[in-house]
Every structure is written in structure tokens, then in C-alpha cells.
Length: 288
Ligand SMILES: O=C(O)CCC(=O)C(=O)O
Image 1 (tube, rainbow, N blue to C red):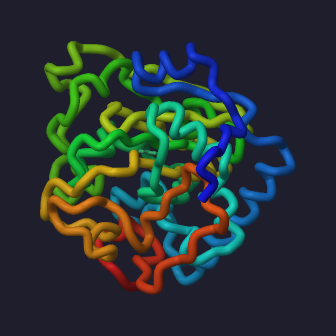
Image 2 (spheres, rainbow, N blue to C red):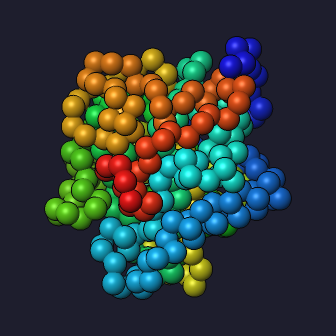
């Protein structure tokens, strides 16, 4: 571990303030073209590996699967993806946005919205997980230019300040709650964010966000990395794969196998855990 790490990408104070005020912020020029293309190739390859036996077209999939092809914890099965998941520039930005000295990895995932893919329902991320109000931030890394017509995200500005609202069942196992009509949001409208490749959009764990349908002919290729502040404890006992795998019980510090420190930058890339989650989908449990 490098104790005296300095940030590879230093944020302007206004960028951090925007994130605190609005619950999301765009950072430009995080990746150069060739570097991003290299990461995209690694993620494409692992998504193709994970989905090679699935021959269904989008209309044969569940409502949830029509929002995106979801492949989680790609770093655990692909050494090509590891440099992106543990990218020092991203991890350093996460630490700056959260205002903490050390951050851990919660998860990475590819979210590829197929041509004709439906919208992603509006939700908050953090209410999915038994982790209370630990400071948490997601990096949304597009590999291509993304506008509303091909699956951009929108964010309700300031919604993170409402804290945890009613969870939204984006899997559609039950009727999803219409969080955009929650009185705590005071009727605020989501703001759509177009993103160029090389830029990254960050949102806080309680920011209400959604993604548009993909009306284009190409896949909307996005990779996300979720970071949380080190030194916080599990708050609830409902099942969640990464904490259960690391044998973190309620009241214990969230750390261990599969939850490595990513800032300060570790001396070596972390080793993947032995027990893996499912190849695709939300990885509620271990196994294929
Ligand atoms: O990209 C999407 O469709 C949804 C992404 C999302 O909900 C997230 O990154 O938290």
C-alpha cells in the first residue's frame, strides 16, 4: 500500500462542490482514446465469454434483462479488465469526491444496453444493499458517445440529500415503485447527461437516476465501478453476495475477500476471490 499516494487526476474544488450539491458530476478527459479502447476491448471480450451460450434475442428476455446485459465483478474472471477496475485515476477521484483517505471496491460491472433495449427504471443504488449510509460513489464509464437516444443517464439533482427512499424493484419481480413521484424529491426533474468517450459520470449512492432506452443500432457499452469509504460496518442482515462471501456479519467492518482497498493504490493488483458469482445478472448468490 502506498501511504503517501497523490492523485493521478486532481479534481477542481468546483467539481467536488457540484458533486456534493447535485449528487452527480461529469469529469472529462479521464481516459485517452487508445487507453479507453484497450479497456473496452477487454470488457467486450469478457462480456462475450460470459454470455456466449445465451442465444435469446432481446424480446425473449425478462423485462429486467431488456434494460441491459449485466455482467458483474468482471475483474474476478478477467485479467484484461483488472487494470480498469483498479484504475488509479478513477479510484483517486472516488476518494476526492467522497472526501475520505481510503476507499474500497464494492463492485464493477458491464451494463451493455442492446439495440432496442428498454429504459433503466429510476432508482437509488444504495437502498439495494444492507450497508446503511456509508459514503458511496459510482463511476459510469461509457466506451462510446452516449446521448439520450442511445441510453444516456439522467439524475435528479440534489436527490441524494433525501437519503434512503423506498427501494425500487428494477428487476420487475414486483411492480417497481415510481420513485420520481416521491414527495421527498419535491417534483424535481431529472437532468439528462450526454457523455463523450474518455469522460466519466459519477453519482452518489442515494442519487435518483435512470437511463433512457437505446433507440440506436449499436450496443450502448458502459462499465461501472462502485466505491465505498473504508471503515464502515454492515448494518442489516439481508443477503448480499459480496458481504456474505467475505463473511461480514452485521456490525462488522466491510472488508475482506472481494472488497479490496483501491485507494490508496495497492502495491499489487488484488487477487480475485476463489468463490465467484453468477456469470450474468445481479449476482444475488454464488455460482453459475
Ligand atoms: O446504465 C444503466 O442503464 C444504469 C446504470 C445504473 O443504474 C448505475 O450505474 O447505477
